[in-house]
Amino acid sequence: MDTRPFYITTPIYYVNDIPHIGHAYTCVACDVVARAMRLYGRKVMFLTGTDEHGQKVEKSAQLKGIKPQDFVNEVSQHFRDIAKTMHITNDDFIRTTEPRHSKAAQALWKTMLASGDIYSGSYAGWYAVRDEAFYQESELVNGKAPTGAEVEWVEEPSYFFKLSAWGEKLLAFYEAHPDFISPPARRNEVISFVKGGLKDLSISRTAFSWGIPVPGDEKHIMYVWLDALVNYLSAIDYPDIDSEKFQDFWVKGQSMHVMGKDILRFHAVYWPAFLMAAGLPLPYRIFAHGWWTIEGEKMSKSLGNVISPHDLIAQFGLDQTRYFLLREVPFGNDGNFSREALINRINSELANTIGNLAQRTLSLIAKNNEGRVPTPGNFTLEDKELLEKIQVTHESTHAITQQRYVDCKFGDIFGSIVEAAGKANEYIDKQAPWTLKKTDEARMRTVLYVLAESIRCIAIMLQPVIPHSAGKMLAQTGYSEAEIEAGVAFSELAPEYALKAGSVLPTPQPVFPRYAPPEV
Ligand code: MSP
Image (cartoon, rainbow, N blue to C red; front, side):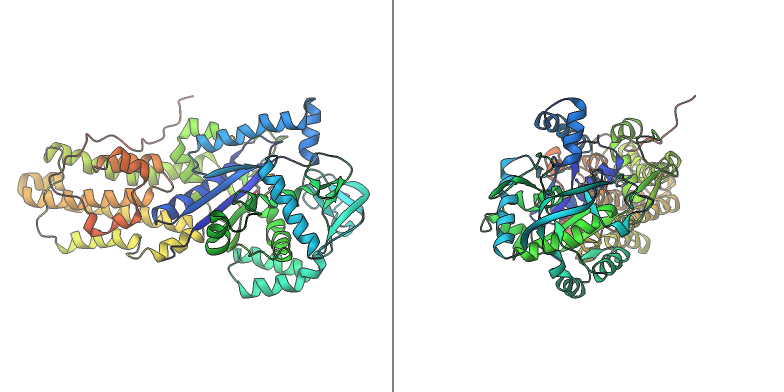
């Protein structure tokens, strides 16, 4: 099992938009991985934040008739709020307008200048403000960027990064680190893009001023993508490369950037090239997830179908929303958001399988064993089978499940937990403790013990994705508030931590009510 420090990041969000489920998606995914790694006992740093410079943000501020700094102060708060509402456990929140960030960006610039990777020239070409990206004439489709964004012609003095010099080295790196870009289909896309030949990249602008000044030439501000990518280093103390954070999370640890497929090129091509040029180590992994469509349509303001995470949470519940986002679609694929799919998923897996198991078992214990953990007799083959099934769901060494988290195989992880809960439901039906109560009370106690222990383990496993409900289940199996707050370590899945017969359990409470649509 990997015990190295673990660093995980979301993209930093442009503050011209208000948070929607696309933003929430990466935050929840990273949160689940971060929480899991903490439960494995690893030292974790989880970073999110806001991307506050560039022409797009400057224009949004102008439209509102306020200064960019006032504008970003106001809108960055929406992203902090949504992180809080979704119980995201980020350890830091970086804003690119913070002094620690501009210091890091300028230091990286100077290092790349000193290594001979930056030269000055002039740029003439297409620029899409919406994407904050330069495009070649050959890339345009019907006069627009391939993403559909409007482009404008830009001619200005500019500094360039010698990206063309890094193609071979990037390809050699991808070859030597086959897991660097995930999922594999995305990796192939990046490789063919690099094989197609890289052009030098314009990395400064002079047409506007909302950005970080280029050191030594303040008429220029840094290209917003160079500025933004450095956030991953500014939050871990760069340029102080001797700091504990930098050493732990960038040098000795395992680091991972998660983002949508639309911005993979920036992360998998430009960012590693900048890092190589500065002589810095590269992250362990770049993971690109897919995009959500809404009831079959692209999500857009003009279609008026933008989904706010606040609304989903208010209607369906926080854990339900978190669970659905990660369970419904294999991470990496595009997915379609539909209310019907959400309701089916939460009713069948959370309410009928997990909630029902907890509710039935714990109320039987409350009624028939005075609310105490029952004393088991000898385990039968069926008892052992169920307990083993639960154990293999999170393998005894946890190494396989840990890797599944790093691989973002959320569907597999949660699917196998639900399957284990399904087995426990089959077991309860077959053993029928309500009948045993009349025929064989000792056996009933063994059955209820096996079930309560199964619930304890299932709740431990579910903590990363549905922390609030898993906490309720843990409370009902006797964990204290402080233990739940701190997180029950995955090591406590081991049989030596099994429930102690006779300990008092609190009154059972339903964990997952079935969702019933409001009557029209
Ligand atoms: N500021 C840049 C990132 C800089 S990282 C050094 C940016 N910001 S963004 O706010 O436009 O996008 C942030 C993330 O939201 C991206 O990963 C993008 O893929 C994601 N999504 C935006 N719409 C989405 C969906 N409809 N579905 C899933 N994710 C989507 O790009």
